[in-house]
Length: 83
Image 1: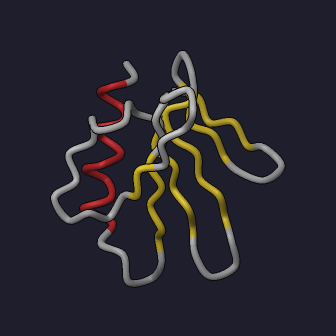
Image 2 (image 1 turned 120 degrees about the horizontal axis):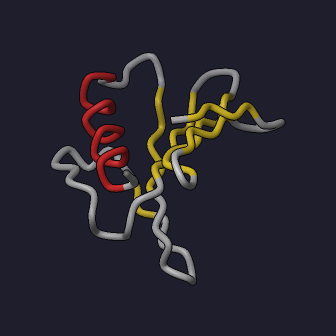
């Protein structure tokens, strides 16, 4: 996996972007790039942002209150789906 810092986000890439992290003052936004409906998220933390071309993006808001262990299970799923 490659980490590519961009001007407004940090991209985590394999053959294509697997996840992007947008850094803001009080929170982080994690965008997971997986097919729509493919992410197993029983807590409903990830918001499905279906695009017109149905590539699939999920957005997770990360604050100081967020369960990072749970978020890492979502990241691992995205990693496995993009291998």
